Image (cartoon, rainbow, N blue to C red):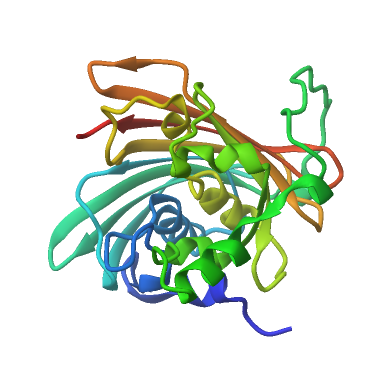
Length: 276
């Protein structure tokens, strides 16, 4: 099998002395022509961060978004902070035209070699069965082709399946609580790796949209942390995101991702700003 679109669109090239270059693709924007999705940009940085080490999986990575990125070439400066036998800690700066857009710090491991106790007391999220969900991606694309609102480019990168009521916010019928989630996989059914999980953690509409708060507009991410616990099994992933507090415009979004085997594979938290 050749490279997936995700692999191509997050590819990086080493140009020497801890410096890498990549190219942000416009197909990962939340709105056509707007800034790329934060999880996608984070995944590109993570690919550069793991290049100088022999450990492929980001067990924890935190990104601070300093300025909006844009489609086109990006430069990354990568520094290995500490290299150990089991873990390596790496930091990166992403720049466009000399302006820093993202700074990330991550610890990497080889999760295929992870060995230790496992216990998960967290209940599975209240997601419906896959066959009870709507094919949200196909519906959005068909609506756009019929003259409706253009489908978000990043939506088309996934095969999204969601409960009908979960999208009520877009029709003026929000849930009344900060919840969002569903089932998903890559649109081309390519294997999902631990770098892909970084995008999954940030690829849904903000959970806060389902509160029905009319004061909310754009919700840009200030900081995003993703903890990866396991390489996902093949199949659809279940994602569940919640927001429980907005304080003077600042809000959190907590996420959990489960694989087709029912295992918890990632947790996330981000700080965002509810702008008007």
